Image 1 (tube, rainbow, N blue to C red):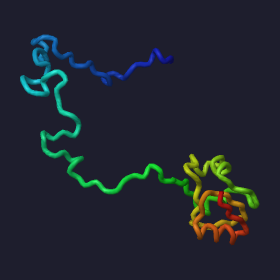
Image 2 (image 1 turned 135 degrees about the vertical axis):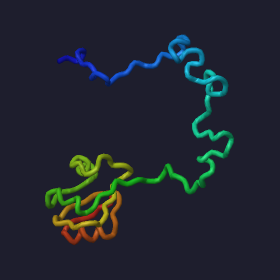
Image 3 (image 1 turned 60 degrees about the vertical axis):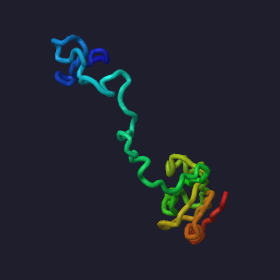
Length: 146
């Protein structure tokens, strides 16, 4: 079978309604739009969210806070995630990304202290939590801030 031989299953596709093709078709004259009014006219209709002059929902609900577009966003890793690396190796953002622990290094990598570390590693990251530093050093490793 080739791509040009593919066909939809019977009953899967339906012919579109041909509107405005004479009174005998059942969809002639007004073409299913009714008689008068805003929606019957070409280009007619109301914008998205319009509620007939009533204060729309997106303006009625309270707005709180804001999104800081300059905020630094860190890719977060836990200490337990570092167990996949060999003992004595140096772990930096490039090796973390290459190993598939994070898809992307955003504004940096932060190591958090969840879990246990069984190997002594030299970990280079942009930020560490206090418990992460303690656990890395307890395992015989070193935590270096880039």
